[in-house]
Image 1 (spheres, helix red, strand yellow):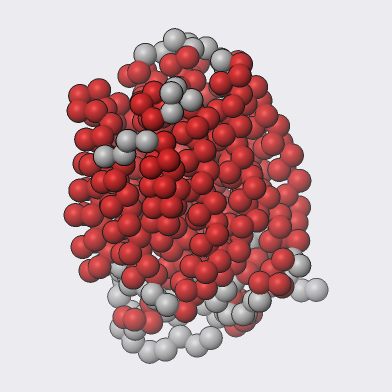
Image 2: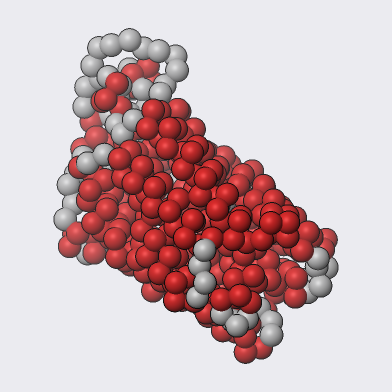
Length: 428
């Protein structure tokens, strides 16, 4: 790969792409992920006769829809425009929020969440904009992804107390209607005018011409990045299955915890406002942890960083299981938040190291199917355990055990980042 001539601006437009991703996750993924636990008790009482299991099933249906669409969307994103796909997703998500505001029955909820939100979030979520960031970054990939997903964690800081107050003041239906207006009116112009699919559109290269011109040998990296993979080759790669199992497990822990944590905290006698503050602290430490995770991934590689994330997960979940009181819940939330800070950036980082840039979208899509059985099982299981025992303790212990098992996974993946480049450049 040769770096062509052209102006060498001190500012690399790729960081604008990261900013767009951060805002997209704040208003998109953040609304969806960090508010649903607040809505859960109201939705269960009004639509499912109090059953949290029944409502959790709706989000599992959404995960199935997303996973089924993901391989097709991944191939589209590799060869088409992620920007256009994201704009379609924004429209679908906005319509789904409006439909939730007038939803009357459980089966309507399943259709709206399972089909509408499952499709919309697939189009505007991480599958699409991670594809864009991978196209813009190579050597700074870890921190670029981490800063991009920072928006979701910042939404987690703001959303729980805000949505708790909104639901108390105007009801859950009006709150969903406000979500629809905000997503459509703010994200559409942002993505339309600022998001660029690939650096070549504006005469740039990955990492920027100014940075690339300083590198002496990037040919080996480019050959690996430009390899075209068939899905059968992916499925024969141990690293691919390892990534799917590790991050499918992290995803199921995250979805179950974010959906049920608010209810768990109220069950141990925290007030609604205290429970919301715990969720905010969880998201705050996730936000603070993301830049650290991005730096560790670039400097130390994926293996060490993933091990750290898994162990911190376990500690946080154990504290949720056995802790009580507001202060202990805040401590557990902070620890758990730092643990899942690396979930999204490390997933994309390790997958891009294993597969490269050219087939990243397709690999990301196929990986969703590998992760699906884990992702769809945890939220309903936690709801069933609660409905049966009246407590989430057993559910949290199961999730902690799953994270311990996942510690086997990093042995099967490449380190990536500076650590991998040093290994590749060392004499045989």
